[in-house]
Image 1 (cartoon, rainbow, N blue to C red):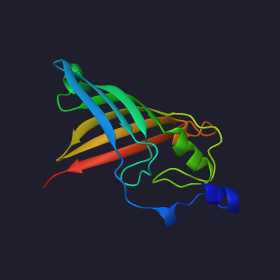
Image 2 (cartoon, rainbow, N blue to C red):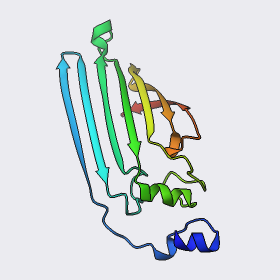
Image 3 (cartoon, rainbow, N blue to C red):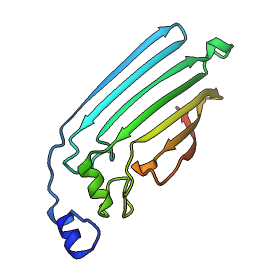
Image 4 (cartoon, rainbow, N blue to C red):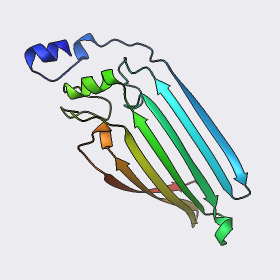
Length: 163
């Protein structure tokens, strides 16, 4: 970032990049609450002083949600789910992105008003012939840790089929 400050060019760490382990810790809890209701909670933290380049631009995260079996409404093979996620990055990571640095998925030259990224996701999964279809919706607040953007809506469809 010092070179970027001197030259006025975006932060680029390619010249000094070297592989380093990026320590972290995570926790996962899954619990069936009743016959047709499940709960999950996950949390994770990774060293925000090292470049993430193997997974995603997240230094800490917390997520929780529920899944409901379609048996509750007479559709035994259907599943409805809802979850909330809060992702964040370290101050060092924020400064790097604000200096023009690019991450795996994040970075476009500025991050003047950083904030945690919040996601509300819901899905509905059901069988269709020999496949399973999942309709998905995500509402993303402060996408890419930028309070100047969003919220953004993302719609998705997944198809799972086996032969």
